[in-house]
Length: 291
Image 1: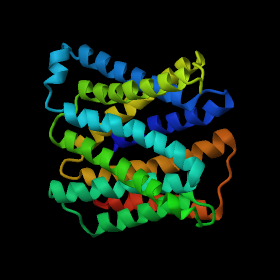
Image 2: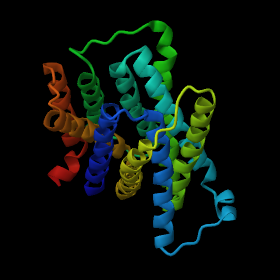
Image 3: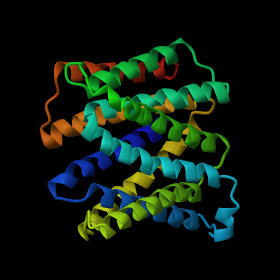
């Protein structure tokens, strides 16, 4: 449970940093890309600190390279889909689609790894989905142009697919610090190409201050994936519990930090969502609490 709490706090700190980007006029894309590069470097430093050597041949011939490449590509793809989704269908719908994707890795864990799922897990997931929905909407109502239904599905399936591939890597025992590094580096390389194209077309200009913000976001970003891995490993035979718990924890943390740091007000519907999130966490962990 400690690993989940650390994951939530680190991810929450990234959300706070993202909130500040617009305030200081920092390019989201540039900060995100630099964050991936910084996170990748953190992983390599940790890997070498553990007494391991890193070589190009070692990475190319690694059994986990395809997992890391797919997840890295999905990272940057989902980020851009979120940005596009916020413009076309609104942040609320984009957030709901993205967070509800936890269903995909949970179902995959049950089907692929024969994880047992009892009544408390089913009830907990239902409460989690309801909590996400009510926490991310205004008065529980969402509407959008139906021609963008493909975008909503992309956010749902894309994030869910990335989490599933990542979970598979952990289950296979691939998830070391070098594996985490390559995920971020792949995302960073693709993002760098995107930035270079936009700069060459004079769509954007490079901002030196994005380097600082990339570092501020990148360090906890690496920590988030590192402790997420530890959390999945600690829930032996029950990784399907981790994704709902992390999602609910992030929602609660974001609500608290938004209220304290940015004086963000929540509607009655949003508070109901937070309450459902707490109930989901309690139900999913019922056996540990009772035991």
